[in-house]
Each structure stands twice: as structure tokens, then as C-alpha cells.
Length: 287
Image 1 (spheres, rainbow, N blue to C red):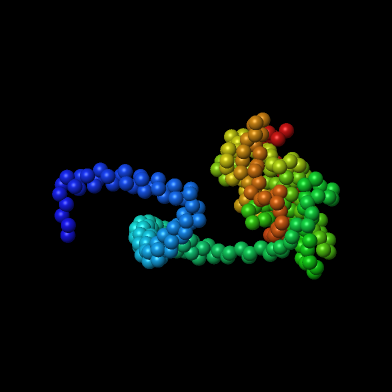
Image 2: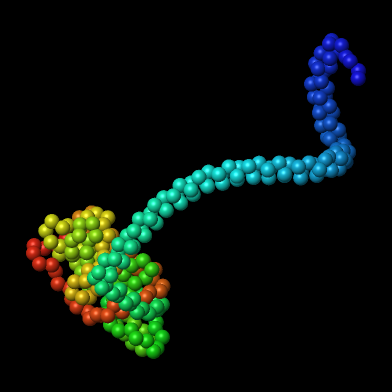
């Protein structure tokens, strides 16, 4: 090994930068003077370096993959900690649910409770959303023979759509809850009050006729009431929102503007009866 003196090393260090600059400048001149030669030199360098790049590509990919595996293992560790906490929480809820189930079974046994029969339903596609004597209704295509009757309740996958008002051999018409002829007795879940939901021929029905002191609460859910025997209890209708005129409107749960398929449920008593307002002092914000 050749040992250089300190002055020589210092001189070489001082000359290294100017030499590199001169070499770069020389390469630029060669490239300007002879483009073909520059291309040949570049191709030759590429041919020389290509095997080196190829031999280094796999190790570098392995290193990147190893780094990714480490990061994934670290994320899995954090995920496992979170899942253990959730599982522990679910075990507590499961224990509470099992205790409530056992208590519920005991109460049912003491009362000789019989579960209600599941309602029969028919699924039908919507083929038209206008026509007929109603402003807001949809026409369904049904396949004969069917057992659909007037008064059956139509629901989509989110909530109540309306009730069947006309039945033919291959069609049925559903009066939507937004039609001005629609009157539905409802229960307000938060306040516990009763009211009537009336259609307006617009996008949102309004709430009317509720007893004093039981005004609808903004954002509370509205469900059907069994009053007058027209609907079963607890079917979702929508949520309460007051408009700029302080009228209690109901934003429907059902997607009434994009109905494609509905189910017609037969809850037994399907007689269409005009609901009566609750007794006592009544309020009507829809007028």
C-alpha cells in the first residue's frame, strides 16, 4: 500500500473538485461535438452498470420487503391489543345479554307468552311513480296468482313507504306517506307523545294533533302507532326536523325518491281507517 505524505494528500484533495469539474465540462463538450460518440459512451456505461443494478435489485427488494414486514408486524401488535380490549368488552356485554335472556325467558314462561306470527310479505318491483288519482303514489308489478289486498303496508329496506290502495291482477298501487291523503297515527320515541303524521304532497310530511306538553323534539324518531288498528306498533317512519316556519316535519326513513323494490306486509288487520286525533287540547303546526 502506497503511503502518501500529508502535503501530497492535501494537494490531491484540493485538486479533486477542479478535476471533476473539468471532466464534466469535457464530457459536455464531447457530447456537443460528437453526439454519436456520447450516445455510444452512455450505452456502454449502461451495459456495464446494468448487471450491477440487476444484482442489487433483488437484495434491495428484500430489504424493502423486510422493512414492510416489520411495520406490518408492529401494526398487527397494536391491532391485537385493540382486539383483545374489544373482545373483553364483548364478553361483558355477552354476559349481560345472557342474563337478560334468561330473565326474559323466565318472565315469558310465567306469563305463558306466545310469540306473534311473522307477517306474510310479497316483494314487488316499482314500475311507475306517477299516475292514478293520487299525487304521490307508485305502481308495482305483481305476478298472479297473488294474495295482496288493500291496506297492506309497504316498506323498503329502511322504513315505511306507504299503504296499498289499489290491487289488480298484475299490479298494485301504493299511496306514499308523503301524499296529502295519507294520515298515520304515530308515536314520538323521545317525548313519548302521540300525534298524526300528514302528507303534504311535498318531500316531507308534517306532524299535527299532539297533546299539550308533548311537542315533538328536534331529531327524535317517529314510529307507527297501533291507534285505530291501521298499523302495527314501532315501524320506522322518520325523524323530526323543524323548518324555518317552525313546522314539525318528518324526514322519511324510506328512500321515497329512489324506490326500486318494496315489500308488502300483511299484518292481519288491513282495514283502511281514517285516524282520529288524540283527545284533549290539540296543536296543529301544519295549518
